Length: 227
Image (cartoon, rainbow, N blue to C red; front, side):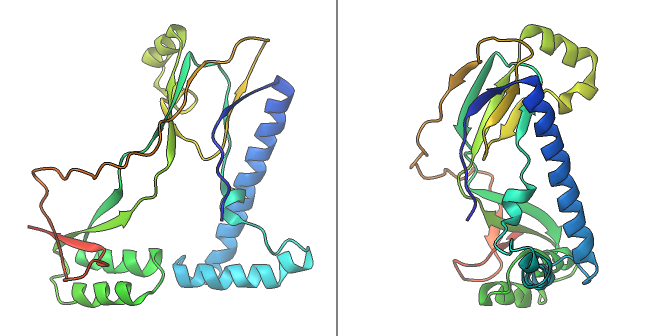
């Protein structure tokens, strides 16, 4: 389980420097784990499970940190170097993520990205009955997650119009499983905060031009062909 807590927190320049050191350490740790897993072959679900067990029983076990949570370690807190005018939190409305692939690409995608349940095995067997070059869509159910819309002051907007390289520093939308930290160059007010509404219970309305059809008759099927 990973902890999620949204919010906004003002920090000093000194704390911001410490935060950057933390971000660099997190990135270094993730690269080290990726390089380690490559030693075991392809970076698929099966090998990730094997390398995680090796790490927990070996190195991490010796350091008494075998219960370390990789998702928490990889997550990067957001550090803003300027104070936005407004931050609006909202729940992501999409209930599914869709990846368009060829049949052969879909087989590889299912084998590398999903645990090998009976439903996945059945999907792969159904794909093997189709032309390898045919286009299909792999649909993944998405859990509700919080996002933040960032509204910048006019002077920042003007800078963004003249220098596109600044977009990585002044993004308009962020995923926010962790609080947003604002480095306050001098004492000041936090931006206006719009809190999220409760998750909508309304059923998702399918688009009239939807052309997807399940490749097999099962509610657990994740692969769809285009009508």
